[in-house]
Image 1 (spheres, rainbow over the protein chains, first blue to last red):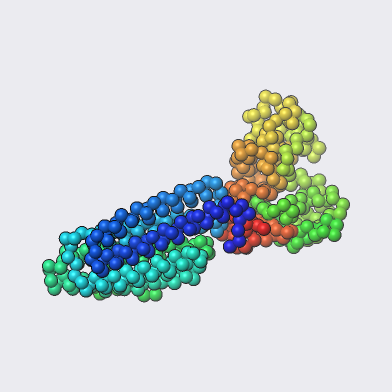
Image 2: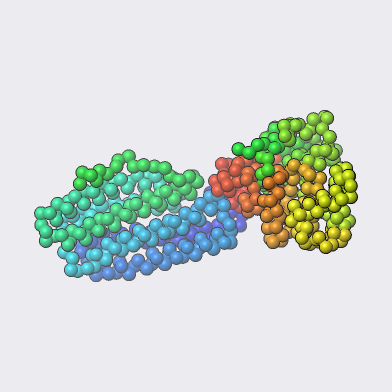
Amino acid sequence: MSEHIVSSYDEQLDLINSTLIKMGGLVETQLHNSLVALGDKDTAFAEEIIRDDNKIDALEKEIDALTYKVIAMRQPLANDLRTVLSALSIANDLERMGDHATNIAKRVANVKINMPDTPVSEIVNMGENVQSMIKNVLDAFVQKSDKLAITAWDLDVNIDELYLSIYRDLLKTMAEDPDTITGCSHLLSIAKNIERIGDYVQNIAEDIHFITTGDALERKSEKRIKWEKV
Amino acid sequence: MKSIKIKADNLNVYYGEKQALFEVSMYMEEKQVTALIGPSGCGKSTFIRCLNRMNDVIDICKVQGKIEIDGNDIYAPDMQVEQLRERVGMVFQKPNPFPKSIFENVAYGPRIHGIAEHKSDLEEIVVTSLKKAALFDEVKDRLSDSGTSLSGGQQQRLCIARAISVNPDIILMDEPCSALDPIATARIEELMGDLKTEYTIIIVTHSMQQAARVSSRTGFFHLGKLVEVDKTEAIFSNPSDQRTQDYITGRFG
């Protein structure tokens, strides 16, 4: 992308860009930390993670203010306009992803909850898959690569499959041993949080497609999860 | 699609040895606003000056190719240039009222073209034209004042009234707002919205926002070539050509 004649315009757009990347990095870390806390059942660490959510929220507000300013001052057009509008949408999605990651920590922080071990390791595995989706979509954003964005988008079907499998296992565990119902219910919510993060990654991939091509991404997953078999 | 009012086909224009336009082909829809954008010297003004044969007055200017208005070749040997200019009015960058009264500024055209038979007809034409140009209410009590005594925005609307007084089909506007403040500009833009119900308007502008606000189609000229012409919305949201994108986003080197 060539530069604008007015260099201060480029500086403003670069700042939006770098703030988004920073925010994406924090969200990735937030999920990673929550998974570590979950795997280790480390309630103290979980408390720390909950406090970190503020940093993500603050960056969203920063991006909102920056985009507002650029629109008011520069009246961006074409690819610039798409970049600025998408920045708002991506920041919003990242903030939601941060909330979902924080929700995981919130459940871990609750010492009274006794979570069965086997599903926990499956959920951590699923979470690590989502974490790599986040990494992929951030790479796509940095490189403004439609191809990488679509690759990240396509990964979500694996997450949906893992979620379905975990869902089944948890139902089975609860049916076999009613004492696990409380713990498993929390794990179900945690799995759902992770699954939702995957959906937001898809949203961001769609925004990157819009920035780079100007079109909405029309794409369907090759596989469709068969919930009726549950 | 709207019907086509003006069609340029493979237009080449030369000023002496220098070629100013290269194989420009585009159409302009009837009763719509078409905007022409591009950096200085890109050929957009040369192009609209071909549409009423303003370039005829320049000896070294040579026009090749075809321009049709309502299907008639305006460069055909039997074309009456005076009649053509009656049908294709023009408004310029700097308001240029005659150093005469407001009334005379508007009455001049109908008088020399023999449009008004009686004095009362002429008065009616002046009033109607001033009303259509959204100027009448501001000047109705001082029609005998000099046109040059008006503000810049009013002068430009007076020039628009003068252009429409001879009942043209087409109004060419060459950067009509570049000398006006934002309020006067907004008045002209609002006026263009009203005028397009009766007239086909072609506007050359350096303001991207103005082109986006007033036009339904936009053409981008660069180095004498028409790079791209499309619906205005497409040009400003997702242009097809990289040069268009670089220009409208302020990246042109």
